Length: 621
Image (cartoon, rainbow, N blue to C red; front, side):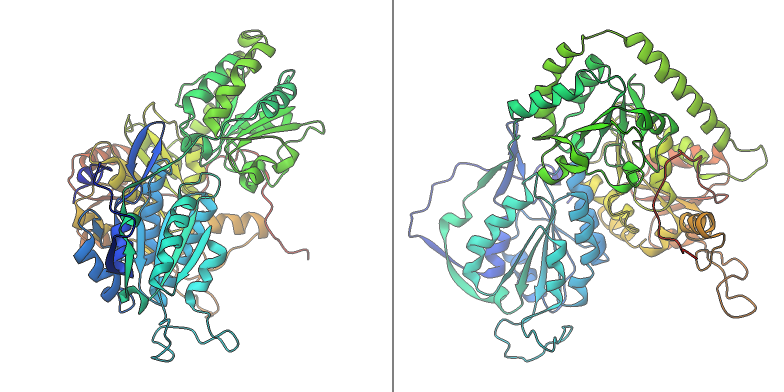
């Protein structure tokens, strides 16, 4: 099934309603597969399939249950075959991000190590507030076989299995020990998945014997259902309190987080910023909510931010936080806002995030809140006054930062490429409909500093969990969601690529066009730089042979032919050592009908520092 076909799966239709006592005899797994195909989400009048596909790696714990059920009942639930259980969760997260959390994928893994491989993906989902449905196989509920293959034996908790590790990582967890438990577990799972304030990883563990047990399910359980994803409105008293704080601000600043993207609040934020003269800084998750060229945009904020945004943050007297959880990278480990009298206003659908830093909270959908806030705040701030002076200050600061950045990433005529120059070259090729993806190492930080998002294009910077190995499968998930149009450019370091390149095979299988740019600096360059900066030395971070004294891998450099590796999995692959060659390779990748990998050897160093502090544990002596 192509990505275009996946976006055109059937929507709910009128069917004769079964009688109240009518039943259908199905196994647990069959009932699960049938039920998933009839769930839909709705927001602003648009209905779409909530779970349009299943990613699965089958083993003895799920092949005779969910595997058989997919053959018998999965007519409208396409199956995709990933190459690693962690990767399939990351693919679901890319899909969910592109779908603005209104859709996600289900992921099924076998018992023991297969299930445990999904744990990192579960943590990434919950940290990023992105939905994913996890279906790990489990032990025998009957316990007749005794201790089963690939399972733990806990000395004092006989009912503990590997899947209990999902509990702290999931927003909802249940274990199915009887078929009829699906009647309550599945609706609750879908409610949490589609609740903007609660969403994250949802885990339904399935005992492997129970997957095959039959039950007379009520026929009405399988009727098409539409789950409304409502926009929580802003309370009038919360809006009034926010206006009171913001109206007289002399040095205001807005922080745009991922919630702006999730709630489709981009236009509302532009209107508020423009009418009320509010500079806007971006978090990693919020990157791209405002397009390049928007006059009030000041770039990324925090540890990976621009000097423009961070200088404004230091002098801000009021900070409006929209859809951000205010992580340490955003706040400079809570040192960025230096004024003693600084006050915060926060819009967030999650009350816990809305009240951080003692903020005046608006607990609401971001778009609904911004639309309610804009008219009274614009009136209170005397729309238009002081606009020219504000523009002049922002233009001066942005020009200074841009000049410093240009000098920092300049490439000598015969010198090696640097990462900043590679990213700028990629940025020059991006247009409407394109996505850029990054997650770990220097790439997400440097993208936050220099990437300029053209109108109609998108960014996905997973930096809440900063999970190595997220990038390529997330790119596949985005491609599956958006269809064949546009470009999906995945930017990874060589260390991340070596950790998880095998979903290139999945891309080849499904003819999914993604472009993977591998920035090769010979190791874990970001952490190597951090170690040298904070401790004066580094060990075990670059790819080197064992040294002469035998203590550490600090000998000669170990080189890997990354292009040959990618080519062996079926991807088109090339190495580029100049900017013209990179532009040529990017154009060729855009015209390909499958995955392309472009390897860029670079001189390893970070981009220009944005001037924010980050708390890292260092030795006291």
